[in-house]
Image 1 (tube, helix red, strand yellow):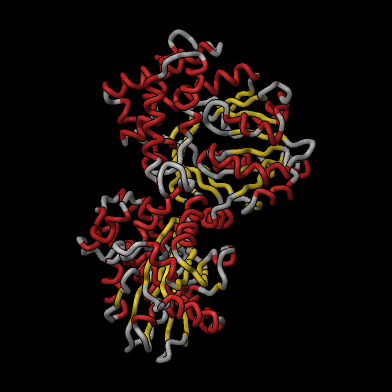
Image 2: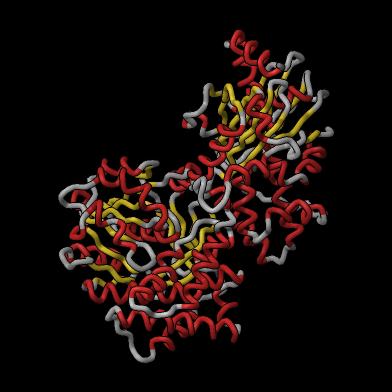
Amino acid sequence: MDKTNKIKVGIIGLGPVGMILADSFQRAGCDVSLCVRNAVKHKKIKEEGIFLENVIKSHSKFDKVYRSIIELAKSDLDYLVFALKTYQVQDALKEASQLITEKLTVVSAQNGIDVEEMLIPTFTESRVLRMVVNYAGNMVTPNTVKVTFFTPPNYVGSINDSKTQEAEIFSNLLNLVDVTTQAVNSFELLKRSWEKTILNSSLSALCGVGRLTMAEAMSDPDTVELIEQIIAEAVNVAETEKIRFPDDFIRQCMRYLNKGGDHFPSLALDVINNRQTEIEYFNGKIVEYGRKHYIRTSLNLSFTNMVKAMTNKNIISRIPGIAGNVTRRILDKGLINKSISSTKFKNTICFLGVDLGSAYSKFTVINENQDLIFKYVLPTLNNDRQAQKNVMHTIASSFDVKYCCATGYGRKHFTQADIIKTEINCAVKGVSHFNSGEKNIIDIGGEDIKIIKCDNENHISNFYMNDKCAAGTGSFISEIAERANINISEMSTLASLSNTDKELNSFCTVFAKTEIMNWIFDGLSSQDIARGIYISIANKVAKMRLETGIPTFMIGGVIANHPYLKVLLNEKFNVDIHIIEGPQYVVSYGAAIIASQHYKNNFKKDYNIKLEKAEK
């Protein structure tokens, strides 16, 4: 394809569906632009590209990888693909509306019934295509998808038949790279979207509620009977909508589902991980259309409500005031002394430290005596912005926070902070509060390793960081352990049971994962693999300079979850390393101390007046 005539495709949403499409259009010779809001995923895709494994094997690299939707405007797109979860669409539409040009065609590549309707108010009906995706995959790493199955063809069509030529071009591009896709008219498209949703609804909720893989659900006669009845209810509803299926449709569905494999459907994974789901557009839509025609859909209704009830347990993601007291639940989890009423702290001067790390965001509140009174942690990888809003709302409404310091990778984007400081400054401040004097601090985080040397006055005299590669960090451990099928929570225990001296030769994540696969094929035990990974990390840290003859302390999320590393590092450095209590919160605690000191030094008069009132 001539470079000047390349079709320009933008993709919003880089889960399995979006990543497979991105790779496909790149291989088809298109000019592909990606919007990846998550910082870690953005970095991985920008630097390494996208990897597809299993059913589709491919590796594509991309020049245009952006953090915001509005940046896609630079590409003057022909197609804009929405591969987001349905509950993420509304947040994306405001920015996406600024991409509208005369030639733009918008594609909904999402599962469910009526999902394309969300795009119509912004883009109009005549501009929207709907794609019915018949492949699936699981995320192995932030930029790697294991494609679990592809049952061709996919389908794509204009929802009002006004963009049939654009649908043909779209399908032809995918056909060029054997991602077989058929362009169809709006009536056939409607039928295919119902067909796919019925298949999804038959198993997804059941697998989530029962913690069953597709293969497990299809191997049990009791669940098979449930699945057939769920499909039968949906077919009955579809027929009242004038959507006709063959007489043997239910039998065809069961045959299709039997090929599903030993993996969890996407919605089931959301249920298992207490994440928001798309149940409203799956079984929920079947219930909705059933009510329209006065048809009972008891099983679909039951699974819809069960999934809603189960995911409501993820209280942190709820909007305040809906289905329970979010603030109360957050306080119950985060307060250090749960016997003290939270109302007491409204009359106590408090300071907030926030450590926005690459893997987790930590929140720490201290009082004027620098006593820890509240701490909370959220996954940074979680795109659920409501969760962070709820934590900040809880802190603001429960504590008299006078000053806030932010640190970590995301500190410059945390608008509620009064000041920002580097993680090194905050780490030193947090450790020195408990251990004053000359010392070494080892901080292994999600994306880097730092060794800090402090003098007798608790000042930084030197520090060392690993190179730009994330080898030996938390993200490295997570990706390698996942490839080895080792549960992170069990990894330290497994390693302690091994005596192996085998280690990974490669610190490149891609090559290390290949090496791990060779270990598995060679029959190495999980215990030996776990210890081998830790030995490699310890060797990486040991190459960095550590001052001898002074106390050494270790902090960070990695040592909090992988205490066996301390054993190996003790041997490598020939020292007795001390792990600070609550190592994951030391940096946010240090940030809170900096906030308190900055406030006292710069607002001393106001502080003394407030302190006198509090003492009375």
